[in-house]
Image (cartoon, rainbow, N blue to C red; front, side, top):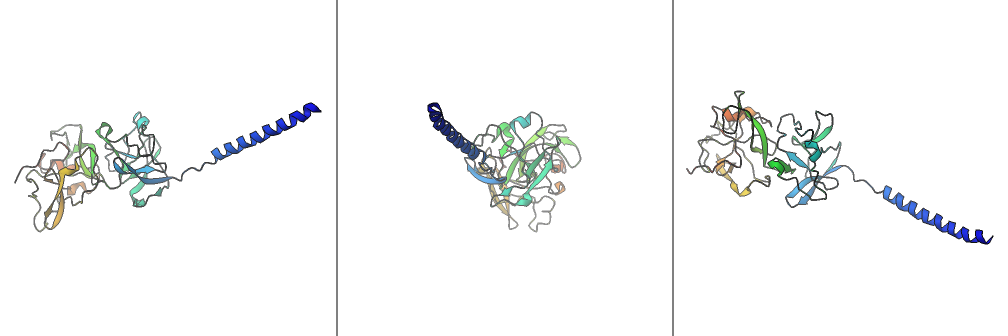
Length: 283
């Protein structure tokens, strides 16, 4: 009986301890999972789009196609995992119409923003990390308000011919500026520094080469924002870069993935613009 008297409280203590352990395990298992969301998070690069945990999302400059197809495949996905949320809650300031879902060539689904497929970067470990910015010069944090983006694409003129960065016939990607939705921007060879020599005062030819009328907001961190300016043309504001007035081309039809203007009326008259573009000549 004495032995039983000692064992009973010991057993009771073990039972109580087990109960506490069980409660602790239940508590861990019941930790709520954040609802799927796309949020805006303040980082060293400003406000960027993140998932519900604060993990940064990215754009890929090679994803420059009117179908918004992802070109990150195979080993690329090891470093840049796909982001997908079916019906995420959106932070104030984000618009549902800007987000769409694509089905990748591998069958997986991916969320896009204004045509840009969204990705994570494998080395981002905590909220606010932006380690993927400018990797390879072609990966950039996803921001909702880019005025300028950088793309890497094959130049294909209105004549259907492929061109290299020096406007000679050939294949090879060229890096250049677009607007925030990936639509190609051009300069005009006959313009001067902060002087539009193309657009008529009555705007009668503006439909052919529409002025890029934009109030500058965000640009990728690799671009010097101070190199942009504005001029007034026919009562409208046109954005400039290094003094070059910026334009769209009508035959691009407002679509991403098109750069037909580089051969119109011949190569070099309406060049693309990028960081290596020289300063516009003085008037």
